[in-house]
Image (tube, rainbow, N blue to C red; front, side, top):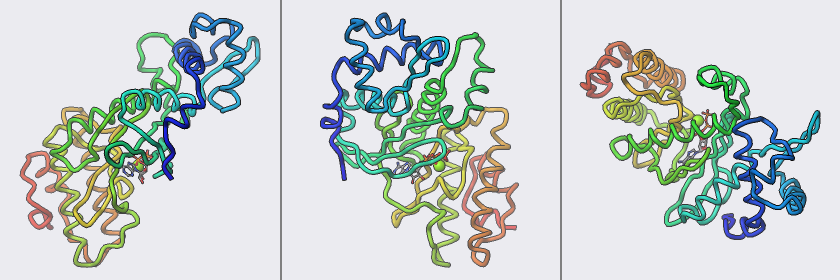
Amino acid sequence: MVQNVATRMAELEEGDFHLLSGIEHGMRFSRWVAAGKLPEFSRLDPGEIDHRIDRCMDRELLERKTIQYTGYRLTFEGYDALALRTFAERETVEGVGAPLGVGKESDVYEARSFQPLALKYHREGYTNFREVRKEREYTADKEHRSWLYTARKAAEREHEALESLYPAVSVPRPIDQNRHAVVMERIDGVELSRAKLEPEQVRGVLDLVLTEMAAAYRAGYVHADMSEYNVFVASDGVTVFDWPQAVPTDHENSRELLERDVENLVGHFEQTYPGETPELDQRRLVDSIVADSFEGVRAVGS
Ligand SMILES: Nc1ncnc2c1ncn2[C@@H]1O[C@H](COP(=O)(O)OP(=O)(O)OP(=O)(O)O)[C@@H](O)[C@H]1O
Ligand SMILES: [Mg+2]
């Protein structure tokens, strides 16, 4: 069922968004935003703030912690609400519906506007605190980095990759991006991991995915997380999705990552369809992708 953003957002008032975005701002400087800072960050009257906090706490958009001081931070639902409001204002999303996929690092929902859409909220850093630490290490300044930053960077990287790849490569068409969220075309199909290919389809589907990987390389990217979980198969072809970790082809590890992508994909076919998967010389295969001379699995058989 598609829920209308307007109805869902109608529950939240302008002042609630002021509070949420004030806390978002404060989280750039500290993990928990001190209650005393809220009038400044949210530009709300101190008298109004308590009321707004209650409303947002009731809706689980905020968390509170009291140790030396009382502090607040956004939950991911709170951050989701801010991004969704931006999409609604820009009229890129009209309604949000059922979950399409819940991963370790993202939540994807069906969404609607002039076409069926997928709304992907990145959760990197929220679910994996090691990521946050890593992100901090290579941040030159000493500024605190929250998961908001890590997740937003992932969404920006994914959207940028999709914009560079579409339409030369079969990827979901990118529609919009804000904060930790990406809006893209919704793909109808079944994940390769769940597809039950007929024996006579196996070689052709493998060929199609490798052809997309070659096209992506030509467009300047290696996916770097290729697996049977990140490919949709449909009657009209394949679509490769989930691009936040993609690396440019001039990255120092791009060859290694391409080799791993090829190995993961071919490995899946060998394991699932041992009788039908052609024997491939993976080195020649990778060489041909890098040299932009890939002409199908037939040419790189061993
Ligand atoms: N454009 C889309 N159209 C339809 N469904 C999608 C789309 N993008 C993602 N999904 C669904 O959501 C699920 C998760 O998406 P995605 O693979 O992009 O992120 P993720 O799996 O959470 O990342 P990770 O691989 O790190 O766990 C997919 O398996 C797929 O079922
Ligand atoms: Mg995935």
